[in-house]
Every structure is written in C-alpha cells, then in structure tokens.
Image (cartoon, rainbow, N blue to C red; front, side, top):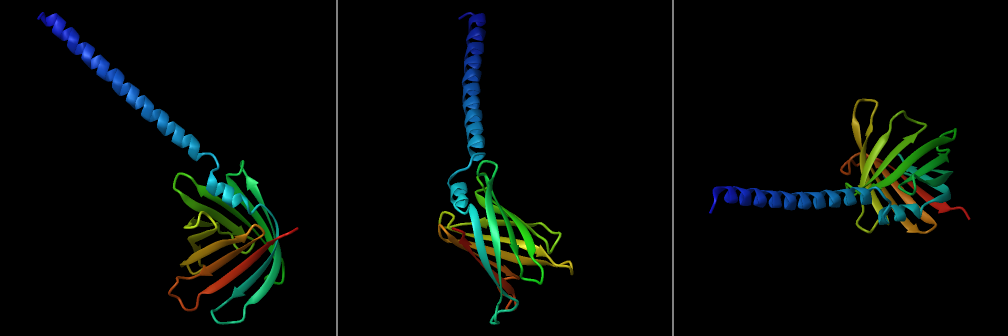
Length: 195
C-alpha cells in the first residue's frame, strides 16, 4: 500500500475521532449548561417555602435559662417572595423589650448545594447571622445551624428549627449555646396567619 494512502488513512481516522470527541464534549457541555440553568429556577423546595407568604401575628416566648418561666411577647410579621419565588423575605416587629424591635430575615434553598440557607438581621445587633439547614420531611421542618458572635470574642452555636404545622401556622424555635450546655437560652415564636 502506498505510504501516502496510509498517512491519509491515519489523518482521516484522527479527524473522525476528534469530531466524535468534540461531539461528546459538546453534549457534556450542553448537559452542564442545562443543569446550571435548571438550578437557577425555583423548584419544589422554593414552592414549599412560598406557602409561608402572608401576614402573621406572632407570640414569642423567651427562656433565659431552662426550667424557668418564659417571658412572653406579641408581634407581627410580613413574609413576601423575592426574585420570582427564589427567596422569602420576612420583616417582623415585636416588643420583647420596652421598645419595639424590628428584624429582617431572608430564606432560600440553594439548588446547587441542596441546602436551606438564611440570613438574619435585627435592630439589637450590627451582625448578619448566616444559617445553613437541612430537612428530612420535604421542607415541613428545616433545622438550621450557625454561630452568633459574642461581645467577648466568642462564637456561640446557634440552632434554629422551623416547623410548618399547617397552611396557617408555623413555629420557629431558636437555641443559643451548644446542645450539651445546661444553661443555654431558648426562644419559641408561634406564627398565625392573619385572616
């Protein structure tokens, strides 16, 4: 066989293989793009969170220490959707102290990391609290964790559980301190949808 024919066949084989590899790579790129675009849109977790949209009255109980009588307070909350249902924004006011205290919370579900996320701020601090959470019951109960910066340069563990009771009621339980601390304080806020 003529050596030019052999060289031609080799180049043809390499070119055909390159086209095949490019097609495979192109298909992989298209699949990656589809997954990226899909992760950018609200899915079932965001739809579950959106059930909380509305106006609420709240009752908060605060236990400075376990096994004590709680302090109790009432307030209100408005929850709205942000960015086409990707996130929830909660704006609340309560009067646990002598004056009303306002707070803002943002909630979401990160489709890429498959974790719930939240950022909280309130008028009693200049800190932004970041929380990450998981759920074992499709979002009816979400358990978050994070830390609170203490003025003594300590980072206190902070855990939050949000439990959806029904379409008009949910409860937020917060605990400051590690689970093995006997003296850790707790808050419980019950939400009731305004009719």
